Amino acid sequence: MFSNTQDVISALATQQYIASDEIATVLFLAEKLGKPVLSEGPAGVGKTELGKAWAKATGRRLIRLQCYEGLDESKALYEWEYAKQMLYTQLLRDKLQDLLKNADSLRDAADKLAAEEDVFFSDRFLLPRPLLQAILSPEPALLLIDEIDRSDTEFEAFLLEVLSDFQVSVPELGTLTAKHQPMVILTSNNTRELSEALKRRCLYLSINYPSHEEELNIVRIRVPELGQKVAQQAVEVVQSLRTMDLKKHPSVAETLDWAKALVMLNADNLDERTLENTLTVLLKHESDVQRAKRELGGGGFQRRGPGGQGGNRPNNYPPNLGMGGRRGRA
Ligand SMILES: Nc1ncnc2c1ncn2[C@@H]1O[C@H](COP(=O)(O)OP(=O)(O)OP(=O)(O)O)[C@@H](O)[C@H]1O
Ligand SMILES: [Mg+2]
Image 1 (cartoon, helix red, strand yellow):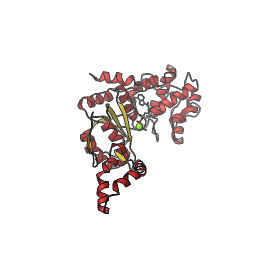
Image 2 (spheres, rainbow, N blue to C red):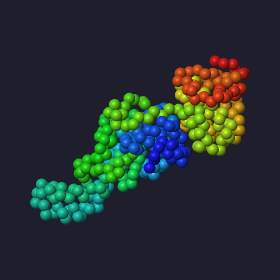
Image 3 (cartoon, rainbow, N blue to C red):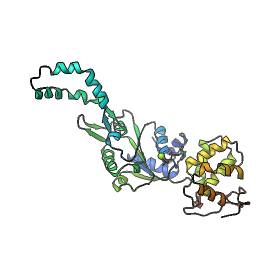
Image 4 (cartoon, rainbow, N blue to C red):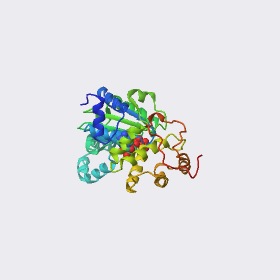
């Protein structure tokens, strides 16, 4: 379906997803090797969106399993629909009485009932959860296992089994095997270390904040209403904020929120007032807002803080927004 990584980039772009070469290479290889992808990275960098966009780009049905602490097999794999089983037994009471009326002992009655139990433990009463839905899906599916790091290690171990052979055994029904092996994308925010066994089964993809050029493309494709000049200025501010020592750096999600806010405000230039009034769309801690205001100083932004991504800066970086002249610097 895809003959090179450029095809992958183009297919994702049709879904308004801007993919780096690294993302495209990992997806391309995952398709060719039939392996799951484990994408890890900070919040809001497009890990979940990648799964959704790839499902659409490849015409697969998206099946999503959101992980959380305490997630177990009954919520991830399947459950019996007890309420429906109870309702059926109520409605079929007369029939059941007919069946049992000639039984001459309790044991005999239980045997007669047991002979009918596959009526109640059949597909009709089986409630498939995302993992089983992906296995049973009649059409090709993409299984998005979102935020796997939030689940418990026991669940991770169970998942390994499912991912290794794509079959599940339901004691009452036997072994159910996938018709089409689903494409699997797992995401993790890195809140805990995942097992080596899980990592070994997956192709690893580290998604980090985009480069200046990529982020500008994301803004252009997602918020095309925003003027070119403001878009450029906005991305420069965001990239600069990520070089500062803040509690929480703005993610792509926040860049897009900000871009939309600037459209709402009809901003055609990112002047000092607009920037000051809208910084809280990007930064959610008061101390970060204060620090950003100090550091986005006159004569340009100061370059400081750990994890600086200076390599991505354009030639006209840093921009001079004329801030800080009044206040001076930190
Ligand atoms: N490369 C990209 N191209 C287009 N849109 C992007 C890209 N990266 C992120 N986005 C947009 O940024 C927003 C956040 O993305 P997403 O929800 O996928 O982040 P995430 O990494 O899953 O975050 P979290 O860890 O908080 O769940 C979405 O609106 C998504 O459309
Ligand atoms: Mg997500």
